[in-house]
Length: 263
Image 1 (tube, rainbow, N blue to C red):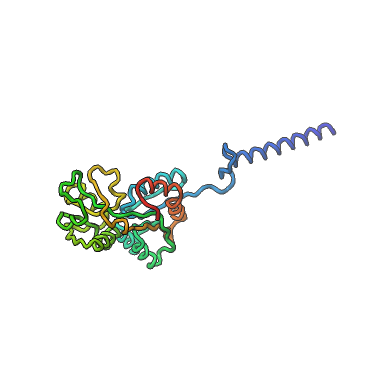
Image 2: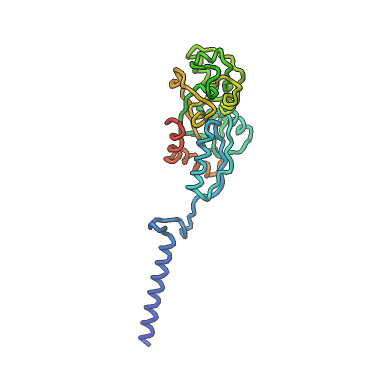
């Protein structure tokens, strides 16, 4: 009888030890770090909708891919690109988004004043260049040449338009634009299509575009657009997660490689 009791006790100890070992192995990844499995605390899940300035299209498309790789249970549901002032107007009028990134602080301030968000954070900067069609058929070589060329500009109410007005005024250059566009992408498209001799766009817009060539006009380094980002007040928690990712190491690496400056 005593021998049977001893064997039963020993089996109980071995069983308990085995269970404990199994529990620990479930909570560790192959590197011995906590993976969240079996802890009752899974990683973030859900969707995120982003409104972003048109000049951020290439960068944010790439950032979205990197973000989903880091957070596989979070989906970037949509990224809407347009002029910053247009996006702010849409949000104030009831459009739904979790994150807003604008190409200037003035547009962002309009959203803050509306009460839809608070405490935006700067994450990048940009400057203007003169873009011309490949081969420069209009012989545009200086900022002053824009006065006599067919020139397309951003509308003054959008960030690239406000920066353009500041640059031209400082250089005492007066331009009568052939058209004023609601976002910088539209300006670049008209120049690339040969519908204009020149246009003022951001330095990041012309990188890798073989249909245009560009130069930085004198004084452009004095007119810097700084980009803020914010998660809206009624946004899902994934909004804050995405905004933090943009400002984090991987987001900064992508932005820097695509020509954006530090904020």
